[in-house]
Figure 1: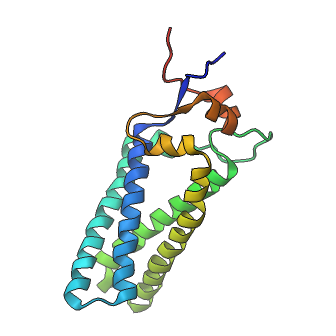
Figure 2: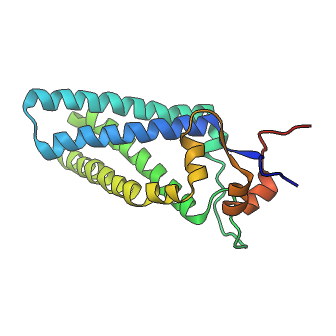
Length: 196
């Protein structure tokens, strides 16, 4: 039986690095892109902001590629499919759905961003405009979902929120795991303070 001091590894280093960089870069990209698109700055300011936007986009791309290369088991390990019982596994249905949506959005933004930046002269005006609208409005839509749903729902489980954001191990309390993810706790748990 676990005691109240037991801690469970919830977020590996790769998860924490990817999530943290992804969040910071996402909002930096939204801000630089929105200023250029919505505020119509002077030419020199717009060019400078777009240079920053492209540079941040390159790092954003490398963040995803790094996660796929160095932690593929973490990226592809989320089990999808029907759950036969009410108690939750490591991820609940909402987390799985948002993971799929955010992953698709990240890939879509990386692909359209690279096509718009590198291949703009070769893709034609109609394809360019389609990708540009998809890139701009897709990023704004996902940002609204992150701000209005993902972040508030993450704050409902403060132990998980702190587990992914605090410096150090990505562990949570035994009680938090037992409350939010009893199936995962029972089947797959890795305890971070095994004594003997």
